[in-house]
Image (cartoon, rainbow, N blue to C red; front, side):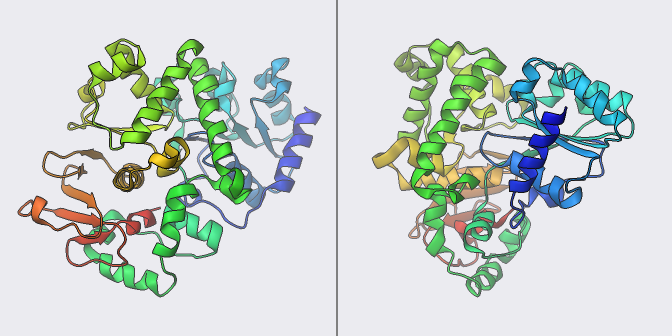
Length: 397
């Protein structure tokens, strides 16, 4: 117990609260049980520690612990919590819960047995809370955290602070938003850097090692999290890496499932399962014509890497700029909206809006006459009518 307290204080003393992710403002911190999901490396631990430091400091009634700590190899979390509560503990922050097998059952017990205890926990986006054996879905308020938006990147790395805009704001007022942004900065000055190395907050530490660290994150997901949480045979990990490489060189990738399965040496059904796993761990985004649940059992219509930084890490010299544009658009829109395949353009969003994502010379001829349709153009500072700058969709959170 004392070692955990010591480590908690040590982590708090090191965390910087100068910049806090926008998700912190959307979380109802008064809830008794809060879960924060997200891919490895997007900043869940930092957010947890920042809130704890700002709200509770080094108070004895608050405790942080990561469940991948070696301490839990010989101790149970339930014993730690029992002592913590008896000493007056009220605020418990649990990190990396997916590394501790009985996490869901024990957290359920804490919620039921300690009515004055508030718990915030983080876990891999692979964790599906709705399917948790102890039915945490009726108890926990769940939030998804993804990497930095373009807006957050500007604030974190360049001290350029701007408001967030909803999709409806952007569609109806994008010219005014562009003009107000241009009074603060030149967005295109920073946008290409964001696409290359602005999505994961650890780029602040050492930019020269950014792709090395990103590769470590990907390897950790493929070699440890998927075998641990989805039972993927480690002998097949290299096939998953091969699959990511193929997508990175072809994005947007329109899959021929049978040929792709043959190319990497797995059965068709196995390949579809792998694709869904890679989406769960936020390495891929799968786009379907139909948003319904049945579609998830079928092959996707398009494959994208989850974010553009992965494309630069995996694709190196074979980057397709058009693919990077679409990867960025899908990433930013799918966080808060439903993004599907469109038969007449690139994407159909929220069952209402049609988008074609292209370079600055694209015209509206391809989607002319389609209701609620928009051209999303790269390399422009501001648009006209239904022509909207690509970068502006990075201001949504």
